[in-house]
Length: 301
Ligand SMILES: NC(=O)c1ccc[n+]([C@@H]2O[C@H](COP(=O)([O-])OP(=O)(O)OC[C@H]3O[C@@H](n4cnc5c(N)ncnc54)[C@H](O)[C@@H]3O)[C@@H](O)[C@H]2O)c1
Image 1: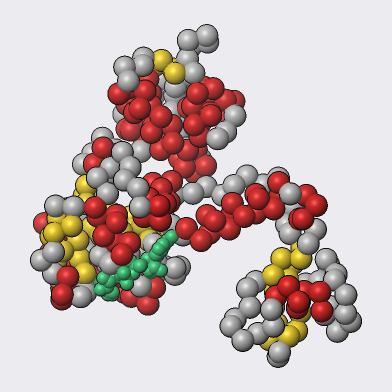
Image 2: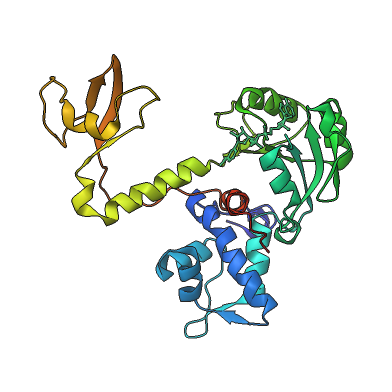
């Protein structure tokens, strides 16, 4: 190719970064921020690996996607890596966030003071309850939901956080998208439909706990063969008794291979504990962390 036809550096597309790597970048960033605050200049892949719960080989592979290769025996320059990861996550731009639904969860998130240091500012709070309008939370005034579109325009909001009840979430999502929001963090227990070009991340503490439960089950091999059942609704048979009482064909006896159990006209799903070596699903780290803070009542950095 002649030099004149070679694509310029600016025009060359940046190589894609795998989703799993993107999910780990915030973890590396958090460690690096702490190290930079402590005046530490270099960091080993082992330190980053321990913080992210992966192998150091995985860290090196992740960082190679950003063009950071480190120096053998020295490690990575903390400031350089901070800049690269921040730039790749788009944190070098000021991102205004709107939070919709300022109830229990919304209050906790809006009060959390750690977001600005991580590259985000909650600039607008919106709630449908007129009684909440005017209340200051984390220094931001809750505004009536009728002002949602104007606030998005005024504050150039590109990220919306939905903390409404599930029934209202899709309608809120539609309004956010129509007003120009292109990224949504959804805490409501519902799957949102969005057009192409809009990114949705869902945070669900229950799902995270279920994943932990899966790993707990794997740590206890003798118990993993026992059938797992969903909790019965009030008024149905006690689960322990029910598990041992019936097999799918109606015979009695405790049977690990049971998959369904008919009891009081209702079917309980029963499956043997799963086994396997699958990696934990990537999580929405910041969101989960925020929910955990809400659950534990602790204030973070
Ligand atoms: N993802 C998780 O891990 C997790 C954890 C806790 C709660 N949640 C979910 O988060 C949501 C909020 O929970 P919560 O305990 O804060 O509930 P909440 O009832 O305390 O708060 C909901 C708020 O949304 C407002 N609202 C309702 N409809 C609205 C609309 N159309 N537009 C704007 N605001 C609206 C209400 O006025 C209220 O202030 C629920 O969907 C809940 O299931 C998720």
